[in-house]
Amino acid sequence: MANDLTITNNNDLAMLGEAAKDLTAGDMVGVPLKYVRGVWKKKNTDDFVIVTPTQQFIVDMLSYEHGWIRWIDQKPTHRYMGRKVDHYPLPTRDRLPEADLAGTEEDPWQETHRVVMRDLGGDGAPKPTHDGLCT
Image (tube, rainbow, N blue to C red):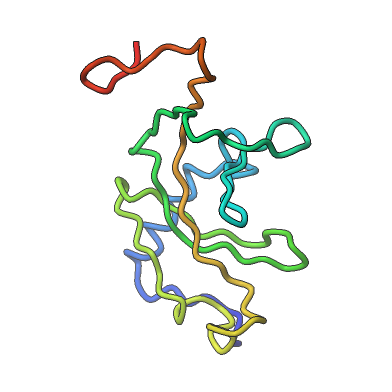
């Protein structure tokens, strides 16, 4: 079938198994930070608040992951996400189900990149030291 994902060898299956060990129910850490129409916004409870130009964040570079999310009716149905440090192989779009929809408005797959950051919380938060670390 056109929607089936084919595992081409045992190495692929082993890599998918290792990636599955790190998955959680929501596959999300913290709150989303989004770039909408030229403005960065952070989800604060039920609403999004604007991130100020001077707001500082610490980035966990080891958390960087990439992959694909399949969306139906504005809800994620499938995720193929993995961390670069774990050597997660990012499949090309033509290797995912529904390859015939790639590049069209009907394509349910969206390439995604994520990284975990910590908001330093404004004026009262610790300031980075001269070497860029926070204490």
